[in-house]
Image (tube, rainbow over all chains, first blue to last red; front, side, top):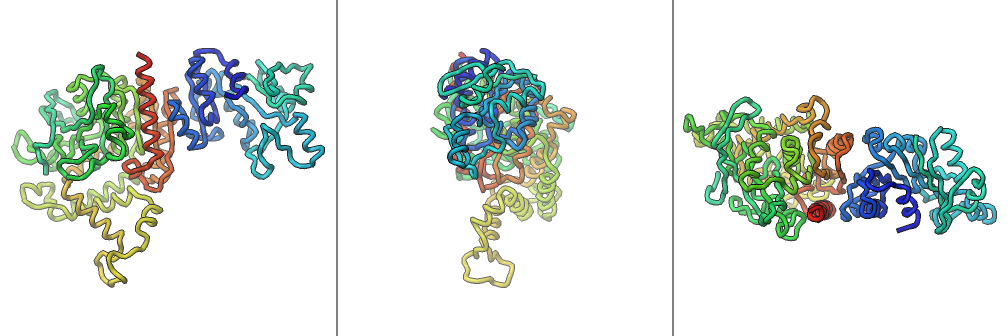
Amino acid sequence: MKNEFKVISDLIEDNKKALDVGCADGTLMQYLKENKNINVRGLEISKEKVQECIAKGLTVIEGNAEKDLKQFPDKSFDYVVLSQTLQAFLSPELVLDELLRVGKKAIVTIPNFGNWKVRLHLLFKGTMPITKSLPEQWHSTPNLHMCTIKDFVNFIKSKEIKMIKTLALNNNNVSNITNNNLGTKNLFADLGIFLIEK
Amino acid sequence: MNTEKNIKTLIVKKPLKLDCGKTINNFPVAFETYGSLNENKDNAILVFHALTGDQFVTGLNPITKKDGWWSFAVGPDKAIDTNKYFVICSNVIGGCMGSYGPSHKDPETQKTFGTDFPVITINDMVNAQYNLLEHFGINKLFAITGGSMGGMQVLQFITNFPDKAKTVIPIATTSSHSAQNIAFNELGRQAITADSNWKDGNYETNNTNPGKGLAVARMAAHITYLSKKGLQEKFGRKLQEREDLKFGFDADFQIESYLRYQGSVFVDRFDANSYLYITRAMDYFDLVKQFNGNLSDAFKKTKAKFFVISFTSDWLYPTQENKDIVIALNSIGADVGFVEIVSDKGHDSFLLDVPDFLNALKNFLDKSYTELKNEK
């Protein structure tokens, strides 16, 4: 299991109810179910991935986060997880609002476009950056709204959303993001991981 | 029509009050079982059949001498694995494969009921079938499942008996029969009653057979079970055993010949009055209205785990109607999974060899059963 999922699961208290939005093959769901006794559901757009989840005995609903989150009542989950997909929605803001409506807390992770490798790629090669967490060419990437950790922090602040925990993931190192080190983390982190609530 | 010796029946002694207000008692419910019930009696799956199905789910149907209607899904090592599970299926009341229906004799007059048989509903059907649980001493079913009208019975069963099933799998179905579906059913009923041999439903006493009307009903319905793309690919404009058009009204096209064949084999195994009764039951089905417009209330009392399945090319019970069930369940935080299977085979997909569907069904059942075992 990738390190990101370990960090996410550490943010989730045992025996709670969680929704994994864009749960893919259910790796994180399975870990949460087996190791943390989480009552976990998944929402996934790909039929193949839904089948993989069913084969693992996971409860998953085939659907699209932009259309299908509205069927869940307010605060019906303790946690709603969205891993590296916020940037792929037509309207990330609406999705974020929905996550915080459905979940008492949300865990959102974003690939950091502010990482130095990304910056150097554009600066020296003059082409759209391709990195480990952003592997697609500009014309085939699902990512419509790339942002940096700093962008996301500013966005969260502007929406008066409470940040309970903000973490930077750089290779396998996890560290806290604070007001003081935001600039550095924005330069070196591959991924930002945010535990938020409204 | 019934060859009684191959039909197992339970005579229900308890009176059953029907939705129409009448009460029936001492009535037969015909059933069949596959696999064996284990010691804990926790491996039973109740399967509900669709409009023209019967209790003979799989293997050779002893009456029609054809494969059971769900042979692709049910059997040893299949999606519903009869090496593991005990499968029960019964003929719906109103049907014509041994359960109490219009071809039975009215105990009071000793005359065949015909249209004097009380109008039954999906609710009546499941209430009648519930007696099978007591018959087998099963406290809780491991699963209930069925497609189309079978799916309606699944939804009604868990509504009526919320703690009697561990898992619930409605397939290609709806919680409320649509205007389009009522329209198609009415077309079928009109075809039957317009046949001069129908004789107001008293064809048995008149020694006539409204086979033509019933065949037309079946032909029309059969089209609705397929998809345009499926029909086009299978038949296109191919001609039936001829080089060119014959400039007449014989079956020039393969699709015509196919439909005529489907109609003709259907009348050999199905009763025209039963067709009227069962389609009526489907039309009356409206679980949303039963709960005053809030479908979620139907499922409030159950802790069962749901798995809803629809098919891309099913225009009779389209994905959205199946999703409405999922939405109602989600809005009360029920445990529900959902998948839409890609298939060109239309509404009939659930009866056919559609691997993605059969795999999903098998995986869901087997994983849920393992989980049930681990809980103990």
